[in-house]
Image (tube, rainbow, N blue to C red):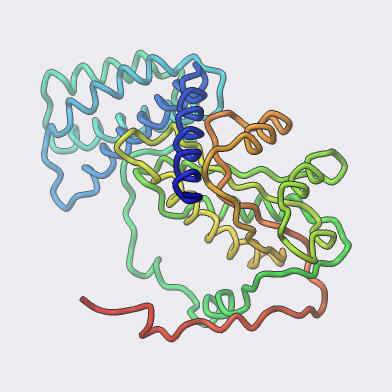
Length: 315
């Protein structure tokens, strides 16, 4: 009976959250996510061994509409989605020009790009790029060292964390795989000089024995509105992959980290935290990462990993 009550409560909370996600801000975010999804479809088509000439016009029509709906938004996310879309459209046109191919819609696309040139950014590339096998070569010993040396740290030094190093770690982690490139993850770093750290620390009850050692918290959220109704729980997968990449990137920059799990479901407590910290209403917390500088020496759990044959099987 207790489990049934929990399931019912979770569904009630979900419907409350769905209502929140019908705000104008959330709807605009959904359009930006859809624009990136359609933009990525253009790029995926160009990345095929032999792209079909004139492909994807129905999708490109959607791009036109979404660009016009978002182009004058002041939101940085919306602005970048527009820049990405226009760059991909230009790459599409350039490819077809190189093949001496055109049709009525491609000519319309050229006019559209020209009419929206003020929204383009030369620093935002689109389309495809050539990647050589040699470029994929890495120093395997260093990669192994990074993976084997990453541990959940629960004993940090008292020195304040370097915000610039954390930003550099985020810069690396954002290159993680992301469903149709929508990058539906966001990162918030608390500040010990404000109440944000204490708010999150209070929420992180159950951490046990090392909260006082944590310098700051990273709050990893998922921007749920960038996924459509057929993609239930995709936001958890993408943000979870990002959190894994980020834990390794933090290690690479010498920042100790401990991933602290939180429920990815919406609830009143999370809504209260969102309001206090000004986190957008269409984002759900996926996890926390307690961060701090490494001591010269510290104890960590052995955390024996299962034998590879337990977790890997060819089928």
